[in-house]
Length: 338
Image 1 (cartoon, rainbow, N blue to C red):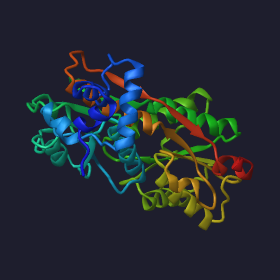
Image 2 (cartoon, rainbow, N blue to C red):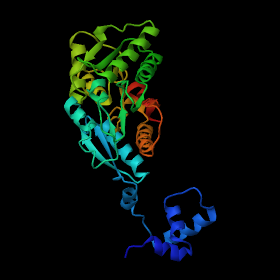
Image 3 (cartoon, rainbow, N blue to C red):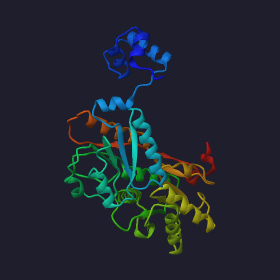
Image 4 (tube, one colour):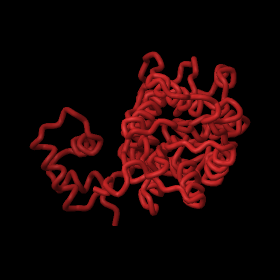
């Protein structure tokens, strides 16, 4: 039998309006009254009708999250964080997979799901300013990632240049002097450009080589791409003593090739990845990685959507989430196990 607000009100000896105020977390309820109503809620096992609450506000209770690669562990972990953040506000998340294709990103951004969602969180790879400047859809849009848009939409990212510099600095502090970059892109890709820039800046600050011979481009972001890039450098006669990879999957692929060529990680070649995905923590050699604060990215994104839904009238803002460099065995050896 479903417990109603009226049942809770009778048990607590208060009005239905008072119970509603407690359930909806209104501020102007005394602590004693809140405790009294909460006790009745707990005793009766009352569960609020979240759907009805959203409908009363003219909302669906659904936020869409559009990502370029659901098969990529980073985006899977980010999606999980967004789902958790949204659940804290009684929202559910509808996932869209764009494949990083411009036409699909345009379709999503222009509101083809507008009737069933209250807001959209989009991580674009290919969209240009002109693709979004003519957007007429009123559903709030929040952008994720490192592409800069001069548009009136909230945007959340990490400082990729600073993160890349921290990764290279870690390698230099360990005495490495020939640091390769794996994962540059043959065509424009903002995150890769920023990470290459950070790599160059930190090496230049140390007076070390940041030449093109130490940069290996990849067509994708996966293990195979990292393996091919590492093999290409070695076959070209370059044997760096350290590698900074665009992401963890590329780093893991590179470590596989290093092992096959008889090179030890980290004794011969130290390796740093980016994203801190779970897979990197459980290999035969655990992976040092730049760890973006995925929980903070998710929280900022969800709160930005809800802020706009609640009528926030402010300029669009760019928020920067933090990151941490987590040192593991791929740079510090077995001593990093602790």
